[in-house]
Image (cartoon, rainbow, N blue to C red; front, side, top):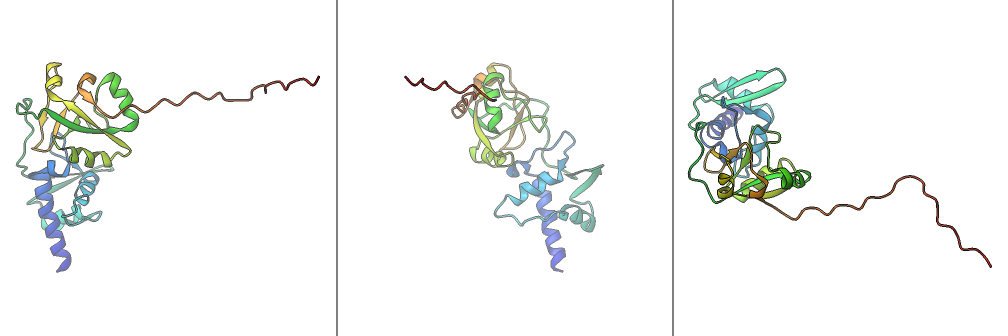
Amino acid sequence: MKNLKYIEKTNKLLAYALGIRPDEFGLICDEQGWFDIKEVERAINEQEDAPRIRRGAIPEAVSILGQEKAEIVIDGEQKRVRAKAPEFSHPASPATDLPVLLYTATREKTWPVIVEKGIFPAGFPLVILSPEKEMAIRLGRRIAPFVILTVNTSQALEQGASFYSRGPLLFVTDFVPSSCVFGPPLPKEKPETKKGWQIPPSSPRMS
């Protein structure tokens, strides 16, 4: 059956994306290994060489083929998915073999705040970074408009930051000091415009 073949491909893709190399898809799970289904759908459908997953295909694949590869949980209005036996883990100790530079995406409007206060998590419990700029750009497109920032990990470590590996393509941290972050020029401040009615300039007197 054509539909069954599609579902089997979906299940195999889920097993790989969730249980083996979620970092290839720019996916980060929580401490229990759960991913948001909408994020999984969007991440997989970004891949040009991967079969597209239509909405609802993930629960369908699990319900038809059983829970040998993945399992679904529905928590109120939220849907989450995880691999039954993931091959990756959540290390308790910081990563030691760090690239000199890591890249992260942030919203354009957040960049001026980061210059003053550093990078804090936004929309996810941890700051997500990658040694590959292309991956950071991919993640940025999910929050457009965005800018790409560069983090000097040596400087960050010296100032007490800790980085944790989530696969070869992703690292996470809970904070990056502002002095370790480099990005594009800040947007120019728009001049303030006076609002409301104003007295027009007096006209020259006729002699």
